[in-house]
Image (cartoon, rainbow, N blue to C red):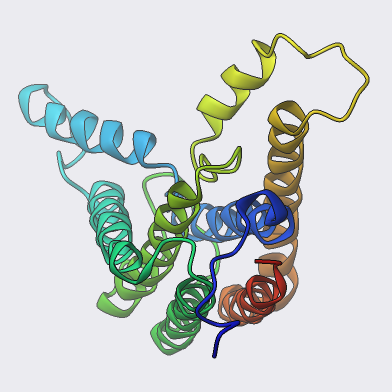
Length: 242
C-alpha cells in the first residue's frame, strides 16, 4: 500500500513516458487508416471543422458538414472529455503511483471497448478515400470516441508530470523545441534534447506498427493489442522508483 501511494520520480519515468509517445503514434495510425482523422492531433480536427463550415458559404456539391467533419468533431470532443477525466489525478496526486497505474489501465479499457465496438460495427478497416471514411455507423463513431478519449487522458497524465515528454501528443511543438535547442551539437547526454528525439522516434515507430497491424490483422485486433500494450505500460508505472 505504501508503494502504491508513493509519488513516482518524473526523472525516472522515461520508459513509461516514452511508451506514451509510442501509443500516440500507434492509435493515430489506426484512426487515420480507418477514417482519415487524427484522434490525438486536435489542431487538424479543429481546422477541418472550420473548413467544413466554410463550405456552407461557397458553391459546392459537397455537404458542408459531412462524415469527415462529424468524425473530426467526435474525435475532438472525446479527446477533451478524456483530458477532463485526467483532472481526477489532480485530486489523487498527478505523480501518485496508484493514479498513474489506474489511469493507464483505464486507457487500456477504453481501447478494449473500441475493439469491441469496431468489431461489432463490421465496417472496413480502411477508408476508401478522404471523403469516404469508414466508421460512419453509431458503433464506428463510438470506437473513434473511445480511442480519442484514451489519448486525451494519456495527454493529461503526461502534462501533469512536467517532463520533456509533456507534449506527448503535440509533435509540432516538440519539433520546434528540438531544432532550436542550443545544445543540439553537444555529444553529451542531455535529457532536454535527447528525450525529445526519443519521443519523436517512438511516435514514428508506433505509427508504423499501428498501420502494419491494421493491414495484417484488422482494426479490431490492432485495438486489442493496443489495450495489451497499455496494461504493460501500467506495470511500468508500478515499477518506476519513488
